[in-house]
Image 1 (tube, rainbow, N blue to C red):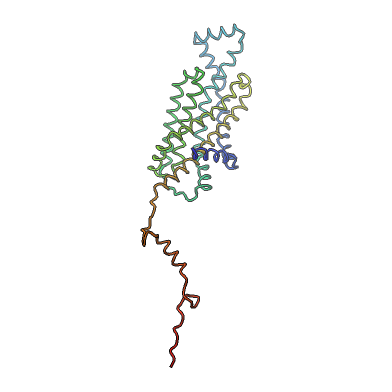
Image 2 (image 1 turned 135 degrees about the horizontal axis):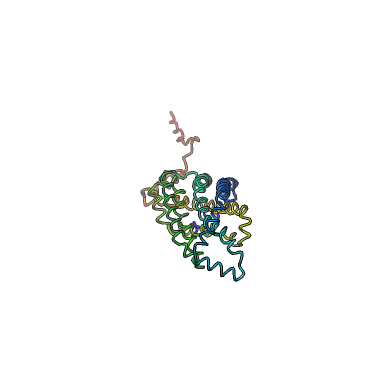
Length: 309
């Protein structure tokens, strides 16, 4: 637990580093440009498609008509944009994570390693191909899990549990490999993940909950839709900072754990006891303390006395 909390506050402090703040703007620019471009070309068609789907579902059409009769006449107008935003938010989250892993994690790992672990040997137990393949299959698995779990989101307690667990698992899978790929060997990485699996997964889940916080801006309903051009970039930047914090947290934790693992595996040289158990080092020290006979400064013996003729 000490290592967990120590790496947590160090990661929080590193988030205020100018280099981290500047790096967090790169995914923001890319994601904002992508969101605005997709919104410009596909916003209206997407809303029309959602409304057409509402009209084709007889049960949902009846429900909306009943709600309009209850005085919620604007619900149909607001519901379609909210569904579009609700469906695109997971895509934005996943792309933010992948952008952070691709652009920010190596730079922040170098920052942490150079400042805290400059003497830690790099054994290059991972590769770019392994990182890309692992991130790809983990992302696909997380998206499939999200799609399967969508019916559970309509149950109030589960909507606060299931998505953060999925995001936490994805963050744990991606970050655990990336932060150890350069410094740890393959055996060391597997040993560390096996030893700290529960802690690493817990770190990912906490990050998942932090990443879910920006989604609360859409709870204001129609007002959030009106200010979507401003709120979407802000939400993307918050997502990026959350995942940047996750990268720093995992880097501090994993590199410190790797350093501890290597200290455990290093052989300890024990000098053989001599003369009643006194180590050689103490013998040498005692020899240095033995007073020299009187003579010159170099310790040469005095001149022998001359015989009288």
